[in-house]
Image 1 (cartoon, rainbow, N blue to C red):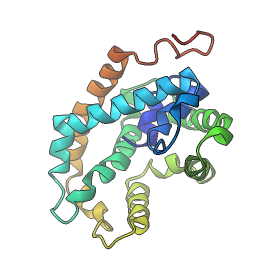
Image 2: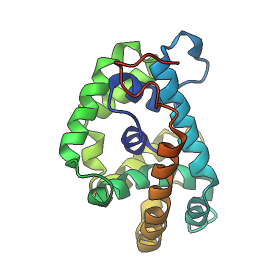
Image 3: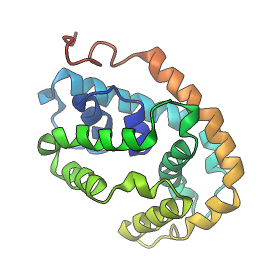
Image 4: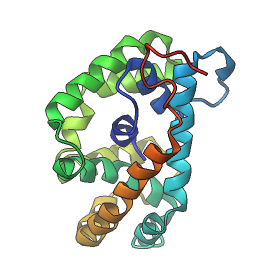
Length: 204
């Protein structure tokens, strides 16, 4: 899953947000120095990624991409799922998307200086350039994917993947709508952050 979905599945506090995004930046990091709330968020991130990778709807979605782009189909779905989450936002929460977006940026800002440098750059760029606003449109989403393709350090055919997304959009969306509620229920059931969701509670 990409950043918006990880935040959506986090607890409503700055440390949980930090931990739920940290999973993409933890390589080489000494996680023993993190406080328990951040660690619980990191564990939740890993849980979400594992469930996503193993879900049949996600595997079927990846199979819709052509052989030349299948290698990066997971990356494409990560970003696309954020767009689909926004598009169907009203199905998952009564909270207005614009409020959630701004609140998320505020919570991330609180821990920005404590994040690994690579994460600081990405999260700072996310906030300053309002990535989630771009994900609201399919055009903005496919532009983001083309930008990712330019950062890949070897020759690839990932650029233009938006054409395949548009061709298969309805099926991809239906698969997402079958998958995401199950993911949400699994996170609630697993309750990895149940002891740290409120900063007024002590981690156990």
